[in-house]
Each structure stands twice: as C-alpha cells, then as structure tokens.
Image (cartoon, rainbow, N blue to C red; front, side, top):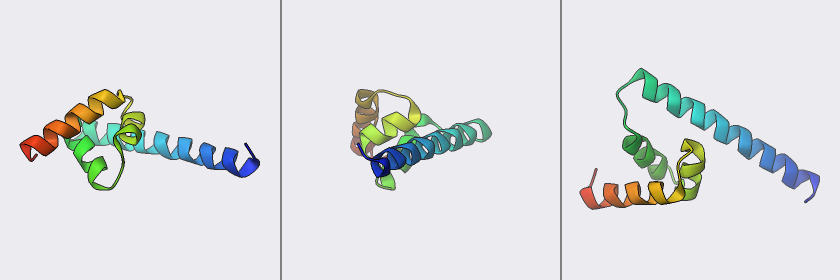
Length: 74
C-alpha cells in the first residue's frame, strides 16, 4: 500500500466518523428513526456496507432494513 492509498483510507475513516457524529446529532435533536436515516443515506447513493460502517450496524441489518423500506415504500 503506497502513501496515497494510506492517505485516502485515513480520509475515508475521518469522513465516516464525521457522518456518524452528524447522524447521532440528528437523531438526538429530532425524532428521526434509524430506518429514516438508512433510507436517506441510501438515497444519496451509499451502499449497505457503507451505511453499516457509518451507523455501526451489521451489513445484514442494513440490508434487511433496506428491503423493508423498498417493500413498504417508506
């Protein structure tokens, strides 16, 4: 792994942390459900694995929630 790859990985880790903090702040401020946050992150193009990493949930949990969102039309 060269320095550019290490730098990119460090940047991605920090961005994930920032997103996680913003999500937690939003949940505390308003009555926002985890499902609504998953839906919003999915709508901006994040994949289930990326959403799971940000929210600290399993990929399976996120995939299940996305399935329910799509099925129910949330």
